[in-house]
Image 1 (cartoon, rainbow, N blue to C red):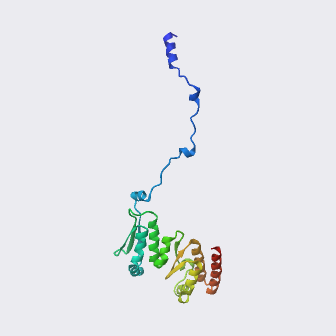
Image 2 (cartoon, one colour):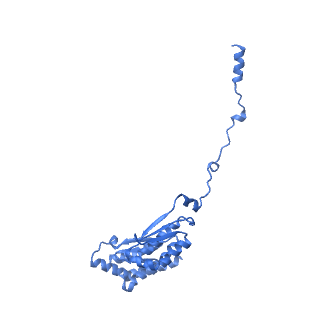
Length: 228
């Protein structure tokens, strides 16, 4: 081997020191996670606008015109939403706007209007805007027991009671609000209270005497008072 080749091999040699052999410092899982700042409500709305439509039943159209100001004010002033009533399609339309702070408020407003259209008063429906743990539940008497003709009419009468006594008793004992719309039943309240009211209604439809239902409701009411 010539001296030129020997010098070329020496130039190609790479010297590795102990510092270069040391492993790079390990990064923890928290340091490796990217950090993203929270998006504001306005930034979310710039990407998409929330929109809801609620159909108004024919029998609730006239009361809606009368109570429109009571429905309009909390949605526009407190929730910062836009609302309008379309007389041709008989629909109430709700959507977010630039002033809307909470994107979820559009669903609250839709539940509020839907409760009113089902037959609840404005005052009872407003509770859906003020409280987060209230729900609406709807079912038919036929879901409990198949009844037709006079048997169905008698079942509806048993649920209402004389001058609405039975319905008011169930409402006061379970802290709910109930609307009897023909064979449909709508209940407004918390999840647990709706369950208790549905059990009482189901027992009445199945034929239990009202006196027995009242006794059970008194026991339930005393237990609920003891919890709070």
